[in-house]
Amino acid sequence: MSIESINPATGELIERFEPFNQQRIDEALDRAQQAFRQWRVASYDQRATLVRAIARTLRAQKGRLARVITLEMGKPIVESEAEVEKCAWNCDFYAEEAQRFLAHEPAPSTAQESYVAFRPLGVVLAVMPWNYPLWQVFRFAAPALMAGNVGVLKHASNVTRCGLEIERVIAEAAQAVGAPTGLFQTLIVPGAEVDKLIKDPRIAAVTLTGSDPAGVSVAMAAGSVLKKTVLELGGSDAFIILDDADIAAAAQMAAKARFQNTGQSCIAAKRFIVVEAVADEFERAFVKATEALKVGDPLDTATQVGAMARRDLRDDLERQVRASLAQGAKALIGGEALNGPGAFYAPTILTNVTPEMPAFKEETFGPVAAVIHARDEADAIRLANDSPFGLGGAVWTRDTARGERVAAQIESGAVFINGMTASDPRLPFGGVKRSGYGRELSSYGIREFVNIQTVWIGPAKGATPAPAAE
Ligand code: NAP
Image 1: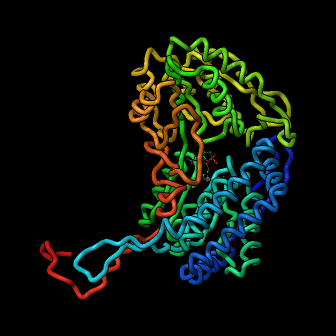
Image 2 (image 1 turned 120 degrees about the horizontal axis):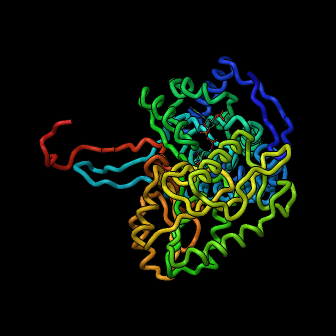
């Protein structure tokens, strides 16, 4: 069956792709292995030359790439352009820092000299989502290439053209600087074929960014063949507004944190937990900030909220909102899909949301905010942690020490005080609970797909302190 790319803003078919047959997959994996044999021994300077060239190519082609993103998944064009820029920044960041992150670490022992080295693992399979179709890929690809690994990408089916554009950009950069071919290839395969790929002996490890059901499936397949995985999964981040918060600033940021990327971000604030004393004031300001958002054609540079990426995803969101309303939630604004051929959904704020409702206990992946009233700080922390997910979170208070005290009690991979959770190449990114495990970005991300190798150089200087066993 062919894979289709559909413009979610118009419902029109853009392109059809034939999935790879086994022969094409074999050719690609053989090429990747061959590339790895050359790349693993390349110096950091050689690797950085390529990764910097990728950054330059991304910047030079920003307009073209941004348009492909917006056409395939519907986000506002201004956000697509910013995404391409961020990918280039990440490439420059790792080109600059990788050698320091992966420098040998001295580990004194009975040896004349002993140290820890970080060696590449091989061909890493990246299974990626559509919501940031370039950023999700480059935050894996840049550190992977700098560590000496080689990548193969299975992109979300609805952004197949983005996957092919990424392959092309990296190939053009490689050609320009004389790097090997086959360092990064896109495989057109449906999600159902991923198990087989993971089990292929030419694949050394796998990283998935996606939903938690896909995470379970990838972890099971990788576990059955003992391969390392990193899983970046869903989230239902809490955005806590305490009674001493700057409400105007919190509400303004709340609108950005929820509706950016048309609400389709794993680290979007999804549950706005507000202490009762300031709930009315926050809701009024949050509604005002949301009403001001311009919804419309994602190719228009004035648009702030575009189309959702697929109609079936909008149907899921609609179900979650309807069920929450039926259980007693109230829509302060929005609450329904917008008419027309595109997958548009009105920016929505639900209040009186409680833990039994889908808007609280499930991840809502679209422009829908859930406001939950908390009695006090302790109740807010309890509600924030009453979630199967633990990706990001935010706490708003004028008292930074209080914010830090609350942050320490939040079960999530990141907490931002008086800000919104956002990714940054310099900061580790990842989750706990059903949001996955492992980290991307920073020095932690580049160390996920390496062999931490102990090197011991004899002869021994003295006796080993403990009885020699293993
Ligand atoms: P998805 O349906 O899980 O798809 C993600 C990727 O996994 C796609 O390439 C998909 O391929 C593939 N896939 C789907 N089912 C699979 C299976 N059973 N086994 C192996 N691969 C499978 O997620 P999505 O709808 O694209 O993205 C939204 C989700 O990603 C949200 O839950 C969001 O929170 C999460 N996300 C997490 C992060 C993070 O860093 N933690 C970042 C962004 C998004 P097909 O498209 O061919 O099905």
